Amino acid sequence: MKFNFSELTEPERISFLQRFILIHSYLYYEMDTNIISDQKYDAAARQLTTMQQDFDLSATDYGYVFDEFTGVTGFDLFSKLNDKDKDLIKDLARRIERNYKDSQYGTKSNNKV
Image 1 (cartoon, rainbow, N blue to C red):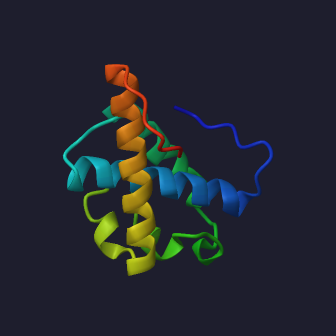
Image 2 (cartoon, rainbow, N blue to C red; image 1 turned 45 degrees about the vertical axis):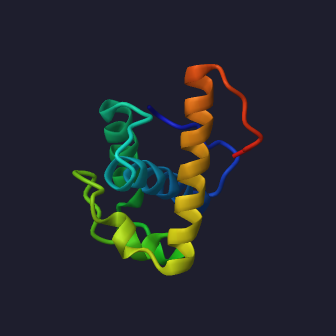
Image 3 (tube, one colour; image 1 turned 90 degrees about the vertical axis):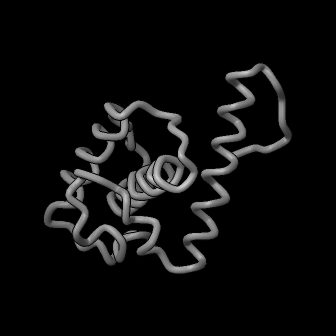
């Protein structure tokens, strides 16, 4: 999975991937659900670690969490977030999970991501 970021700045691109990794790590490790394949997660993690090389992570939304991220695992990322960011990631993950389940089972919810 490779994202196209043609209209985003470099910090926005990295922040997007950081958020993507945080959401899917939360879904997997905290909610015990998997919406994307391990291969897609690994590809996004590789893309993020490549982009973060030689970049000032303080210019990104979640740089404080990803300073030692190697892409191998995201099991501890959620625990490193501050409370405000934890609430945001939880909310986004739950919305994504609901939308995923709705699409899997043909139901409709009013939850837009």
